[in-house]
Image (tube, rainbow over all chains, first blue to last red; front, top):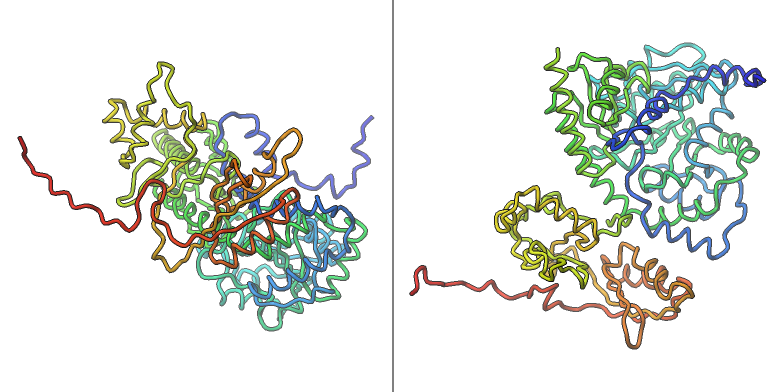
Length: 391
Length: 202
């Protein structure tokens, strides 16, 4: 019996993740150095894991409030105020979610009417566009360019804007490009959003991993807190990807709307992850800074190597991704990535998996050990030279 | 920060990792097992060379041992695989640093468990980044724990919040380190001796 007829049309039409295809191939090969895993190579710092173990021992196994443990929401408010300059009431302006992924999903479900237009800058994280499609919204992509180091410019926003645009999805620093915006650029974006009455969904998951120049949160700018939903989590800063814990902060009415969806679909985030998150916020700063310092050193190394090899690569101001251009090889990014994998067993994700402006680039995640990075760089160099000699 | 997946001490710098010593750092090897002899009874010459503490690079060691550098690296990798060589740490004299590292030694009494003795608790305590070393001791207490922190309050906080509260920990006695005279085989505050050896002597 053919059961596909039961599948909802909009799911049938959902594109398969470009990353997933690529990784089906990688997983079948041996001894691959993967620069394609978008998560820290560090395990969660021990004191955070231990806090979770302790919570289990003490019998913390029950449902929490839908919004999340009050103690956690208080800690989130203090953390966000200290590090992002915005204050949110723990009682009704903060929602603890199952990762930022869930926060994004329920935000779209709570805010998007069928046909509503949602702007987002690309290349971007693979789930933004599908999430918009899943909620029957219309995706309006905004290009970012290498010449701006993939920062989002108000000019590009204005060019892409159409009547009916309701939301702007921001991800700064950006996965996969490592691009981010300085204060002036964020102010320009804010001005545009106020002018066009857009609501901003700001995914700031990589913000702690901003290496130079500081991170500016759009919600902290005048007039923006009331029209921004601030999304953040613990996955990248505290190496807690598998814990599935994040949060959304915003005006009480919008958080309430998201809560309506969350209470029926999730009830609450895992209590153990919440307990661990409290520990991370209270005492995790040292470990986080240590990890960030290490990412920075790795970034400096790998970007230098890419440029030495001839794969022009800007120095990403944030995140742990480098986005080198493969133009020099005269190959399409997908062909380059596949040939690199087959010839030298190094995996990088082709940039087109992240949006049309990713064409001609590959994403390299440098959240991996120095020896892996050194070896990968050597193998890539060999491959690029071989391609040059074959032409 | 220690990556405790493999139990190794994190290598502190790329230079140390590839065996190129920086000018004034000392290196020490932790955790050599009692039985590190070759099958013919002689100590592995590479380990002997490392223990001499001369701070030689892999290239220099290769010359001394009459091996290629690749062979020396291979032997080092094998020692790591066999968990004889756990890692590298420079021995630093931080006494004058304003950065202020506070060190304490804690005597911990714990309850042994069926099927594991002291191991599970000892491992759980050892995994904290603040814990530099942890030993099972004979005598009036069970574990001797060396802890580093950035202030007295931080160390005290670690003991009262994290250590004492673990199920199975019966008591702790914290002693703060006031002054170090000798560190891992190196004397502190002793001037390097001027060596006036004659260039030629009968």
